[in-house]
Image 1 (cartoon, rainbow, N blue to C red):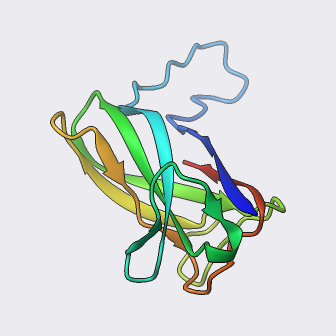
Image 2 (tube, helix red, strand yellow):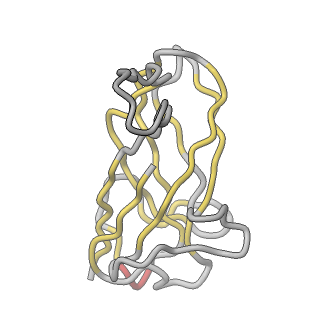
Length: 138
């Protein structure tokens, strides 16, 4: 059976300026836009088991590693917080997970580079990701 990843690009920019305000609030522009995501399956040494954009077999699944294609608007270093959900809809976390997230990765983005690989998330035990559609929220 295969593991499929559904990718949602979620951007949190700004907040509520004033509760129940009649003022209009315009959030600041995002520094980059994610235009595509592909996933590969790696082992604990970051060696690719199943290459990007190929079907990942559940029995061989270990660390799912996203690669983002980004349209850069403002260069800089940004923290990317990731929520990884298993096929049963549960948020996958570990002892080092930030509160409410699976993991965080930092990216230094620039105008020259368009693709950025995040760290993989999962386990060194094969079969970590169950058959079905997993979901990653950025």
